[in-house]
Each structure stands twice: as C-alpha cells, then as structure tokens.
Image (cartoon, rainbow, N blue to C red; front, side, top):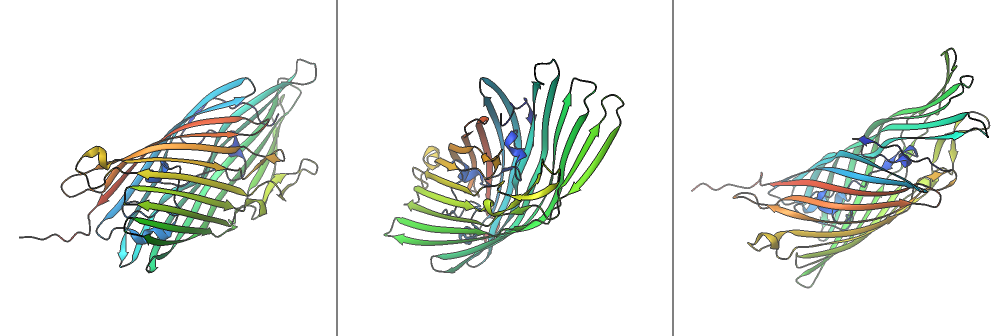
Amino acid sequence: MALATAAAANAQSGTNSPYSQYGLGVLSDQSQGFNRGMNGLAIGLRQSNQVNMLNPASYSCVDSLTMIFDVGLSGQVTNFKEGNRKINANNADFEYAVAAFRLMKKMGLSFGIVPFSNIGYNYSSTENVGTSATTSTETHSGSGGIHQVFVGVGWNFFKGLSLGVNGSYLWGAYDRTQTISSNDAYVNTVTKAYSTTVQSWKLDFGMQYSQAIGKKDVVTLGATYSLGHNLGADPVLTTTNTNSQTGVSTSFEQTALNALSIPHAFGAGLAWEHNKRFTVGADYSLQKWGELEYPELNQTTGNYVLKKGLLSDRHKITVGGEWTPNWQSRKFYNRVRYRIGASYNTPYFKVNGKDGPKEISVSAGFGIPITNNWNNGSYLNISGQWVKASAKDLITENTFRINIGLTFNERWFNKWKVN
C-alpha cells in the first residue's frame, strides 16, 4: 500500500494532502483573482488593470493613472479515496497580496507576497503483525511551507516588446514526523522527525511581444524563465527511540548539508484578444525537478543522504478564456467578466519509486465591476475550481475550491483640475 487513508482535518496551511510530505510540499500556482477563473492562464496575458506576477513583462502595460492592489483568499473541501474508504477534509487560507503601478514611462513596478509551497497532513494506518493480536501503527504528520515576497519591474523595450524580472526572497520551514508504535509493551516506539528552515532568493524573467492584427485583434506571445539554484538549507533528521516500558528515550541526529534546491523552469504562452471583449490563450510550463537530488533516509545503511531520482520533471498545460459582453456599456451585467479554464499537469515527485498523481483541473468564474464617481476599474473576482489528483494504487484526491479576490484600482496619479 502506497499511502494510508488521510485523517479528517481542518487547517489553515493551504492543504490537507498527504502528498505534501514529498519534495517541498504542494506547489502553489501563484495566480491572482483575475486569472484563477481561467485556471491560472497567465504567460501571454496583458491587462492594464490587473497584476499578473507570473510574467513580469506584463507590468509594462499597467495604467499610468492608477495604483492596483489585489488580495485573495480561498476555501476548499477535499475528498480522499483509497479503495472503498473515503474521507473529507476542509481548510482555508489567505492566498496573496500584490500591487502594481506605473514607475515611469513604459515601465511598471509590482510587489507582493504569495505562497510558494504548502505542507499540511495527518494520517495513520494500523496493521496486525502476522497472525497475532499485536498491531503496528504508523502515523505521519507535517506542517509548514515556503513563502515568497517579490518586487519586479516590466519595461516596454520597444514597440510591441516588453521585458520583465521579479526578484524574490523565499523563507519558511517545515516539520514532518513519522512515528511507529505498537500495542505490545515490549516493542519500542520509533519517531523520525524531519525539519528544516529556508532563507534564500529567487529570480524570474519574462518576455511578451504583442502584435495588432487589424483594428480589433491583438496577439501576444509570452515566455518566462526561472533560475534554478541551491537554497542553502540543511535538513535535519532526528531519530528517537523510546522504551515503551521505562519511557526513556535516546535520540540520534543527522544533517544533510545544502540538500534543497529549486529547478530551472521554462514557460511559453499565447493569447488572442478580440475587440477588448474576448480573450483566449494557452500556456505550457516545464520545471526541471528531475535533475535535482533530494535527501532520503537510506534504509540499508541508516544514513540520511542526497539521492537522485526522487523527483520528476513537471509539465503543465493550461487553456482558458475571458468574455466581457461590452466593457463600455452602462448596464452592469454587460461589464461583468466571465471566465473559464482547464489544466493538466504531471507530478514533480515520486511515491515509492513510481510517479505521483497526475492532476486535471477545471475552473469558472467572473469579475464583478465595482464603480463609483472616481473609480471604474476595481473588481470582485470569484471563481470555483475542481481538481482531481490520481494515480494507480495511490490515494485519489478530489478538491473543490472557492477563490475570492478583490482588486482595487485607484486613481492615485490622476491630475485633478480645479475650476
């Protein structure tokens, strides 16, 4: 059996998935409210009233008169299924806070905080030892994750071509624990505690080239690259053996130096906008996790060492679109932005030497305009997303997630005229 059925939980870690015990945890898609309804479509999108941190080249099109703030949160219900057993888990999380404004002519600046990865799980399994009444219980739990704060600039290098870069600071920690206990008073309890802290940096580059086709259509080609490097973290494994009769414990600590890294990553996207009413696009991304080593306890030697082959390259394909009936209309329902999207991605980790679960997801949502006498660019973004993660002989996860984002588009830099 690859995994035991997860225990019911309510958490604010961003995930309840037992798969978050692998690698750096469950990776965030880092999308914002406006493109979550399009399932995270981003690389080719250029919108002057939204913050698209997934391609920093997009900052160059930020409206020169406004300051954009975007904050978001999510809530989700996940159903875990293994064989004939099913169980649900709920959690909620503050997702992101980002902002952008025009720094100077042809150049925009953005900054904010987003999650990089989340870890949160608690499950156990109990089995009989042979044909006896003795049982062995294996309990797994974990919490933590990595956060990312960034600042970036996008520059319209020349007509149609924009370049951008995000510089980020990564920080966080995780604690993962595995405990093996027994109902036999003569069998010791063994606990393995894995922990580390992360403090490092990250660089992401972006490019977009836009070309008008006729008077009503614009096609944008986008590309991104993230620099892979070692995080400088030193994961620690502490093994504790507790005598079940006396309660006396002995511990042994091992450290894997410079054992965590993030991969080189590449992305490409294409978006087509028609008459400022209809946008469709597609993204492809590749993260080269398969090239990296990751720490593992060698069951034969008992050493905590780096090993290659524990991670896999991650591929992701996303398609999506947005439709606004008439953005210039005075009628409210004509200015609502309707969105839809779908994705497929492969896992970046392996479970017992086999590829982890593949994911398919679909989403739909809308952007509700918020207007007053001096503000006509703010939106309440609401979307729903269904994600299925599955693989043969592993737990199947079905997650329904609600995302809520609020984009404030304030005219801070408008020049007021006094009569």
